Image (cartoon, rainbow, N blue to C red):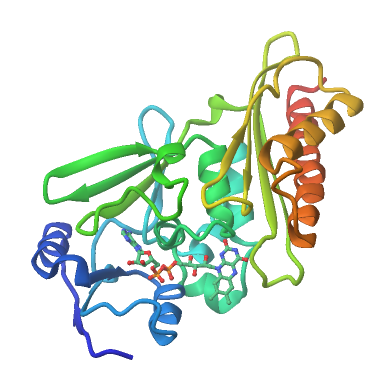
Length: 289
Ligand SMILES: Cc1cc2nc3c(=O)[nH]c(=O)nc-3n(C[C@H](O)[C@H](O)[C@H](O)COP(=O)(O)OP(=O)(O)OC[C@H]3O[C@@H](n4cnc5c(N)ncnc54)[C@H](O)[C@@H]3O)c2cc1C
């Protein structure tokens, strides 16, 4: 491993200054679960590491006055998984955090670290785009609020600048959706997903689907939004058909040229249908219909 200096700023502005000072050779380190592996394998060779560990306000979560849920970027999966005060579909965020990787990774790994690492197979990429979250950053020029759907570059990576820090993940208030379904397929319980799918939907007063977002992850460098889900009643046949259309849209036959790609194509169809069915069932249960 190449030698590096390790910095422990006590405030965000100091952290940003350090990143500015060291330029592109500096990297933020949160839980180190992705970065340290990359450094060991010499895929990343930073000259300076700027730790988020001592920064106040980057851990935990809170509800804003408007009901949005703000999660600090350095909140670990383990902390999030243990959240007992997240109600309604917000609880699905905790459930996803509690069902990935293994205990050591969940204990150290952070939500913000996973998003900034932007590895497409990480569950939280699919979830934040699926839920229409906003990502709040701070840098030398001030702060930015970036919709999750614009945070991940379709060629890989993120739109984050090297001297910018992700501070907060802001999820919409509970009334934005009636229910959420998240599905993934992995070979072993601690493996990252081969395909993941998230469906967030809202039922209207008449009990019909008024709005739905479906997002597929792990297939392309950035999560893909699948259009046209709320176009009719969600019968079993319609849900299967939406899954089939999603598979064709996300991974057209001409791109599914290897056995892995063909398998992922099948999985997209199945997991999208399951995520929609799960969200729909939960929404109906909640509305009592
Ligand atoms: C064995 C193993 C199994 C795993 N399985 C899964 C799985 O099943 N599902 C899944 O979703 N994930 C899985 N992961 C990935 C895990 O989610 C990530 O490794 C972890 O969340 C990254 O967070 P971190 O805090 O450790 O980030 P770090 O490793 O500290 O940082 C990762 C990257 O993000 C940057 N960064 C971190 N925080 C910030 C910030 N706030 N602002 C700007 N840049 C930042 C760093 O500079 C670095 O480039 C697995 C990882 C391992 C090692």
